Length: 227
Ligand code: SAH
Image 1 (tube, protein in one colour):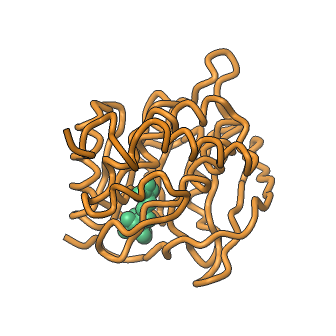
Image 2 (spheres, protein in one colour):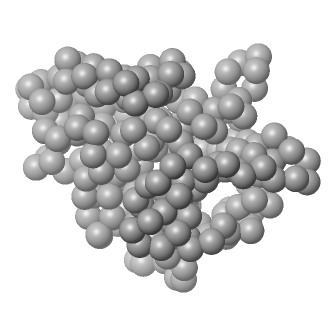
Image 3 (cartoon, protein in one colour):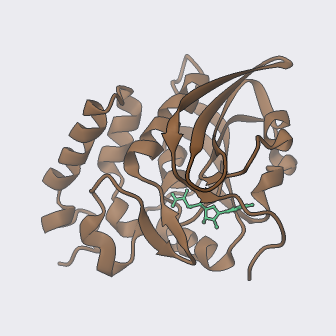
């Protein structure tokens, strides 16, 4: 058995994972739906073998192509924020847009809390990695698209929730327009060092904007996809 297995040993064991969940709770994550899904999703399977032993540290880690898997606390914070748009009778989201698939971890978390996830990435090699990771976990309700997510993905709009793992300098109008009524968008905004994580809540044609704190994400890059 090695640490590529689903259960994990040593630094990827259940006890190590439980410590991470404790830390998320200490930092204010209280939604049990989010904590449960993060407890059971093997983050080490989304990383290259050499970094798998650090999977349950609360840090962002490299995934290749100059990109990173987001910090668990930030994944939890974003997921908890958009879950407020869940159907009150089922506690689940309907259709979700994930911008910046990367290695597919955020998409995997969302997929377990939503009917359907559309995930857009602009670098093909990362999309392929994500496809392998999601297949290994038998997650079948994520559709991957190779495209510029700055424009959202209008073909499947509207979305009950939109989560962006890459930061534009200003709020992309297209993403707001693709929100369903009562939908929520969570996105880091700003250049380089100082970004603010913003939560936008749509109520008919008005958009309420709230700041969730300072964060650091990779930039949302415009332009053609990289094959
Ligand atoms: N959600 C990912 C985080 C990946 S980092 C995870 O859980 O691992 C952010 C990702 O956004 C990178 O993979 C980057 O290539 C992608 N990205 C940057 N600009 C983009 C754009 N305009 N459209 C789609 N993806 C973009």
